[in-house]
Image (tube, rainbow, N blue to C red; front, side, top):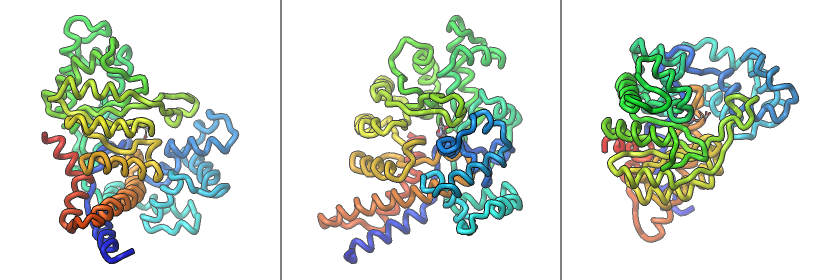
Length: 413
Ligand code: RAT
Ligand code: ZN
């Protein structure tokens, strides 16, 4: 490596290390939500992604696994994936990156000692530690008013830690309208599932109330691969007649997460969802028909990644983000990030963590920072070959854009 390449590498690495991140999609909660904020080694081990990996090796009926206590489940997962086999999957490696990041010696393989470390910890103290270790500015939660554990907390106006922002998640509304309608009615919104009378206005009132109540940065939904717009369906009507006008009026984006096949194996519960290729045409339709609206988009299938970049080239009201769920593996993150830089420059949000357990912020960002940094080094080195010189300030500017500023600027538009 010549000196020029070396200095590009060290400038990029130091910018990537030093820049604080806004993590735009997680499943974490501010501590005011009590037990909804998951943290500690047993939660890490029983993460649903690891349950799916464990079930490949063990022969027990799924229900027997679900009947076990969390600690017993964690013991089984630890033994199966870390002791009986080597923990080379990205998810297992993630657990080790977290423990190592907490200063624990993973070579001891001593789960008891790891537990003892977390047992002595207060959650507020641990939030500070994780934010510092992962070098985060803030995270965006996923807030579902249809969730019976979460809704009552919001109704009491909880005091939020300012590092946790809200996003209004509306899956039940758009994916199971027949069940959602009676619930809205029971909360005082005069709707009926046949869309008669005041229904659309009342759904808009419900959305507006919740955006205001939680101060939502954006509205979000996860959608099946079959999601289609336009379409003669309850979902399409609700999007065009309720979501679009409310988002427009509030000036907030509508984030679509497309490609989840729910419960292909119901016995695996939360771990039972799968992936399917979605239609980019639906996103293109919305971006073209509603140029005054802002849309965010991530998709679950690798096959959608290229056309998603092209759609973003065509629509400046579209912000693509993250390597979602089954795409959140080093080989795919690298491929996708490279492609996005090549097609869009820095005008996208390369990653979000999707953390469900607080501690995961550490590993998801340690792993992704490294890959994004390596790809950037390649890109600046290619520029250097033409004679173009990129300064330290410019590198810091670019990294600050992709790690947070692009998101905040998009919200302000
Ligand atoms: O990544 C996950 O944990 C998934 O189970 C989903 O929650 C997904 O990220 C989503 O936001 O729907
Ligand atoms: Zn998610």
